[in-house]
Length: 493
Ligand code: HEM
Image (cartoon, rainbow, N blue to C red; front, side, top):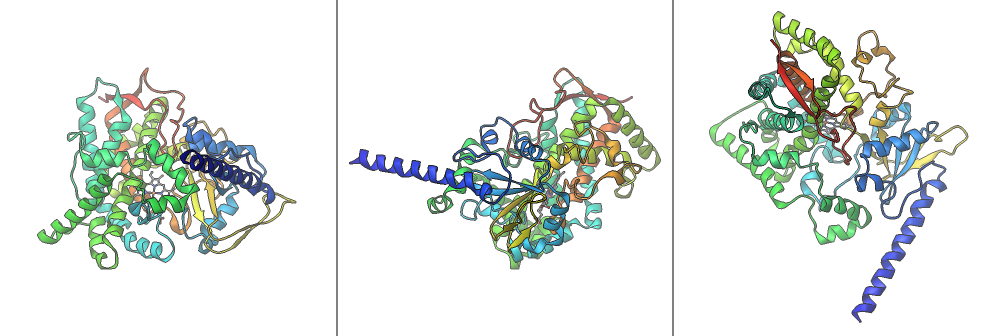
């Protein structure tokens, strides 16, 4: 009896997989959209799933294979997605016709992950608009100005650490992760954790692993994309309970303390406290969680990759040093003088071109939308509510039609003389339109402050452990060098 039940279950499952495979193989063909043939269950993400390549490289293959198309088809498991590769169309979707595309893709449902779903990053429609309005005042010029000293204090901790470890080859990823967690905790929430000293700090350990998905989490992604109702009913959670509890406790205890002691600070927690009546405890916690998932890995990879590229390009480093030294001797680093560091701006922009963490700008269609044909003589395409598009980001930034010699690290692309050559909507490391990165100014300040301090104090030296050329570690999201980033920091006399 059990054998028969098992057998019929296996037949049903195999039947379902075959049916699903036929559907997905036909999907884009029927609509006249070019695509790579999918494989059963995994669609076009087999290379990423088995960590054979980074998702950026998987997208790049598709982007490069169809150079004459405005958009191409891609199967994320069984979910059809349009990759938009035409800059003009990207502008229409993200800016001009934003009201048709107000939401991101729902990666994790509220049931699978209540915190993920309640972040401003993944909130939808009117709720998103209200939360974005609540949080925007945290990122004004004057708030940024008041946060710079906190950032500089954390950068100084790094400089001190490097002074004490001059003879060693440094694991830059680990070092910068500590800086990023310390900055977000202190500037965002008033928590001084100094993870350089408190090396096993719980927030640090959980924070840096939020996007480092385990095999179980990757399997859950695939299952929830194929059988969303089943995963919903089973009540499976994406992160372990201790992750939820850590963030809930962090927000609750900080708010309680500030209320009790009448403490006011110009940070995120303060804003959330003022807006408290309108939002549930999970929604408030979601925003703190948001700044960790949106702001930690992205900022830390920008800094790590900048350091790596500087180690490989001593001539660029020297030019940057001269600029930093002049500013230091002239007026020192302040919120206003930071914007005078033009070459530093070019170096960071070029780092974000070659190695941006964004990968794609996802949007879900919320109102029916007609796309022009993918090529001359093709058929128009109608997007229906629920359909998902990925506006190409990294693939666009490595496209030789937009960026000559894309693999060359060349900050001069962004100089006053050259920046007019950049075509609109081919450079969007922070996204575009009303859902553009909320933390862009904060991130740039955090990245620049540390690179400024490091360049001023040390020569970043390539060693036998420094990967050259850089290849990416296979991953769904995180942008890191395959063998890590290892350099020496040699004190400048
Ligand atoms: C170099 C570092 C960073 C990069 C490259 C980056 C990039 C991005 C990108 C590409 C998006 C999607 C934009 C879109 O859909 O158009 C985004 C969204 C977002 N980022 Fe960042 N980000 C960085 C740092 C930060 C930091 C430090 C914070 C917070 C302190 C932050 C907070 C957010 C938020 C809240 C959103 C969602 C905005 C919304 O949906 O309304 N990001 N970021």
